Image (cartoon, rainbow, N blue to C red):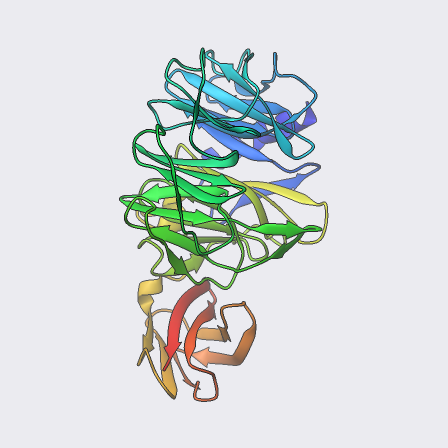
Length: 392
């Protein structure tokens, strides 16, 4: 109950006044997943709570078995599903048609939807339902634990790689995927963005960055990013990336430029879950290497900077990097705020050059670096901007 009281005060406190950063509070547990159905926000802390503007926060797991833990949600028209795992394996799925006030068992595996059909990723394979879960039929796809759906195009993360369907899940074929198999999928326009992290003893391993596809998942392009991406979210226009060690980034141009918007997260920079709810972004994060958690809300308009609300992060448009590519000298110029600190990172996120500064421009010699793609992390009084630079 203390948790629900806190969240009620937290959300109402945020919506009643403007602010320039994330607002949140220490939590004793992390959100495993968020889900949005109609005008209701759901959160799982192993069990489920719900929020709407009429009733505030309420416990919302009546009818959900207590043996497993809820790790994902799926919205499908009138139906909303809560998906359980047990000991790291697919377990049960439950459905509600009354906004989470009551749930009933529907199937023995997590449920996904493309808005037309339901899909289940059981341990023995993938099943499809055309009657809202009343009956299920096996399809030609290996067992999966994560789905991404984009109209008739569906992606499935399986033990045998990434599989793809272009006919509402009736038939499936494997597709070559260049990174750690994805667990997070979002679409902005016609571009699919995916990310995944392999955890070993709570330490991320494998390649950093994310991947994108502009042909419904047939081919993929790796987008180098100097951090592990743990979560992706979108409001249909802008893209957010939650990371394993540096908080939240936003891109307003399909990943061409990124800006760190972690003001107010303090040292809680490992993002566990995030979602868009109404006009807000909701994030569950924790202090890296600890069991201390933080839950916070922030207005989307403030991060995007489109509704007259002051944006604390420096706009990437005010930063110029030239020439780019370059074999020797580059100039970093700001038209707004002095450059306080500039780091050049390699694709592993390691600092290879560092320069403190207090001027509107900075000249850097990158001739000592091996040819390749690098990242500039540019610190000003208003935040951090990330830009790519190519050493020829």
